[in-house]
Image 1 (spheres, rainbow over the protein chains, first blue to last red):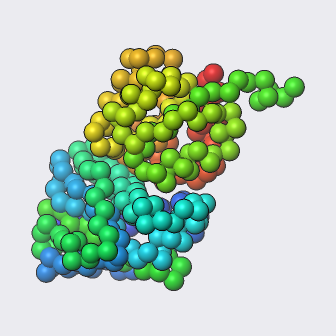
Image 2: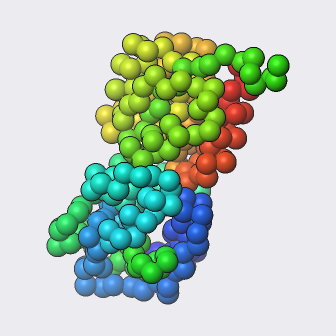
Length: 148
Length: 129
């Protein structure tokens, strides 16, 4: 179960990522709770396993179009599938790592696992997940936080 | 002669499991004073590359497969106590930054970063030379 302040940590992490890396703000929709264990995914997903004081996963999922433009905003000209997968993992890693500012050192994050082109493989370990909708330019993505 | 022109070129090794981050660091403006001698995607690979190339400066991610960055910092400093290490990591808690500095890193840059922040961090690191 996440507290409101904890959800805010992830919202700030997501908006800060776009503000700094893309030099362009993203807007965040109202976070909502999914209780059926299926928070959903786009074409590319970067999953971070969480262990230590909290257990579960955090994932960032986005369509190729958003990730391609994000790469270009970062002056990266190579928009190959490999780099798109690299980016989606790095976004998930950065937002999760930044959360340690509030959660502390015992919020232990794994290296990213990237799932591409197979949305059915993206699953949550528990029934309850919080979904934070992210809108940037014309694109939509999600940050999913599923912690015990 | 301007101050910057008289300073020698330094050899840089970039350590990060993200290709995008490695390429961003390579593109840094500050790179004019730095010659990239190698890049590694995990700590173990970094130690091997360090022994072969003996860089003066290292940028170091912390969360990586095989061997994490803090352990890698310790190993590199044991090989060459004079190496300059800038940790570039998303881990934003103070305890991690302090731990990395205590293990021998010289600076800490939190991801995400702008090109300006990266340049400033590298410039500050190089001012120690």
